[in-house]
Length: 248
Image (spheres, helix red, strand yellow):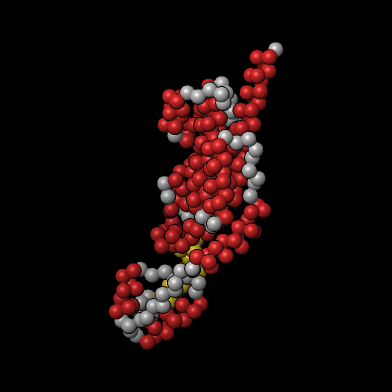
């Protein structure tokens, strides 16, 4: 390997937090005698200590668990919170979408059958088969979701829920630009500095998605929490009116 390129690579490595290279280029560099130091993954104790510090900081920013939730909804809440504590932000965002969808279906189903004391297996199977968009519209027709909230939910479905459920990484990271990236030509040794939109580079997408998830997770979970609390309150008020009508 050209000593000039080796020197430049060493310099770039010292200045950088992350280096990205085509796997074929890495193999070529190895064949030319460049040694790569393999950085071992954190051991379990180190990983847990890092997560503990993060969880202690982020816990105070999470919404409290709502009271009187159905067991399935409560289980989803707990799972999302645990994902956030352990830094699994992408999973927490995906599950937040699941939480909203389930809450829409569950509250609409309960309203349509007339209360928690009844259970109609066939009708619940019908709800489980409908998609997120149809669940929004059905909750709206049932009087649980006002028009403005339905629009917000449709936007959430398109911008957050669907991309995360289908792992559309390009769409998830489309607004991110990796700025002032130093790029070296391994043939000439020439170094230039460029801005790389994530939507144009799969390698950049993989690097920035965890950062995007971390920036987004609290807003998404709070949005899900707001929707769940609104739906359950609307359902409770409807059922309460029904009970009052029976006693008068």
